[in-house]
Length: 134
Image (cartoon, rainbow, N blue to C red; front, side, top):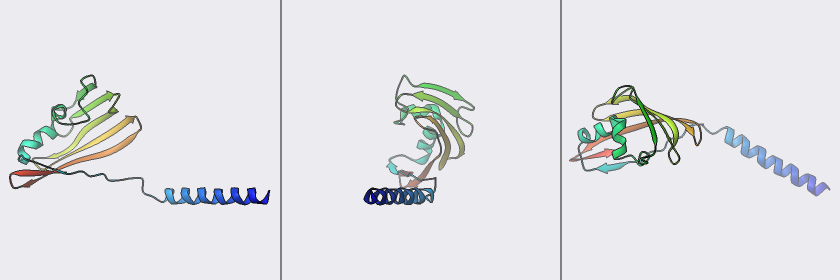
């Protein structure tokens, strides 16, 4: 019986330690991807700054059956997209800032498959005749 009690106490200690470590971690994270596109920033910027143009390049906006509802201006800050799709989920994407031709910042609020509030930032940096897109 003492061995069982010691084993349970040890297991409780391990679980408590894991929970304390997890609680001390920040609740934010940064994920960054970059690629080089053989085009000038001025050619790429309009495709990012117009949510309706995302269907031509975004892997998350390819399903023809996706429910889409656009609001606000056609492009730039205030332009918004509400979407619902089995693969992409359900959420709201809105352009919050744009500095032509170098940066577009968006807010992505997801409700399905899980709730989250993300900042999405596209930075366009010229590199000769190409553009670094981050």
